[in-house]
Image (cartoon, rainbow, N blue to C red):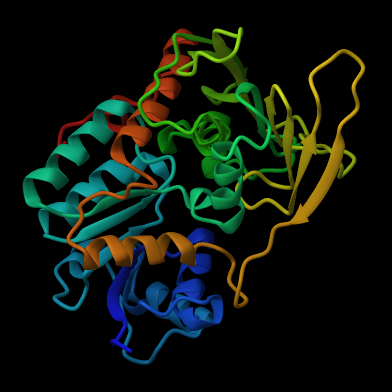
Length: 379
């Protein structure tokens, strides 16, 4: 058996998602059945101090050889780092990713990939020029449930998809349950529901459509602003996609993506977050949309009043992983094979999602600070 390819990681930022990613990296990949790649965490950087980075390494039980850096520049110039995982607020994704690419590092950047499509395009152009791998860290696409749902749709388990509902809502009181400096309510950190929560809803719609080239022919949105914060509290986007198949009388697929800080998407614990509807049934996905707990396939013959037969499946990660390891495995395989983008999370798809969110924000007059929206680097 050949020696597995080892990818050496650095992580920018030390928050909650960085912690989950780091813990997944140091797991044994063979526990989830992965034999061809493995990961080495070699560096972590905090913008606050080197002590903060050291505290992070201690908290996650990092390998002894992993280095703590007190600034991002030190991490990206570390010769032992092959790829950088960016876990900062999305207001900082663009400059952080440009810093990494200009230093010659491959990049996996958390969602939302950037603040707008213009920034995303600039990053992709830079990665192409420098022949570096770059991917949005939309980890849900790599989870076993994401892979399985796409396969079910591809196999025609519910017939041609005609309508999709996708909701990602927290059910929190934005002012009482969140501290005033929380990134979700801060305009200077590109806060609000859409870029943090709605990005998942939109990505699930594109998963269900099984395409990365089909542009919505209609995008309509409603936004409820969060008073005194200049970010969105609730956003709902309606899209229409012209169908590619010709075997159905339905000429288009309708999709509704919604997100909210305030409204609860699953008040009783039994409400599906995602509903993918076809001529012959429905796929329902339960639990948080970023890491579903179960899904249900309902087979139903067309006809008024017909009741379908339902089969339920649990969604489990393997080897004690939280689930971020699957996107890390994808990055390792792509970099090993000399690829600069993933076929599962291609650049075109990231751009489509960013363009949908740009359209929704523009229609509501929702803009962030000029330096956050800028695609100039350095500003």
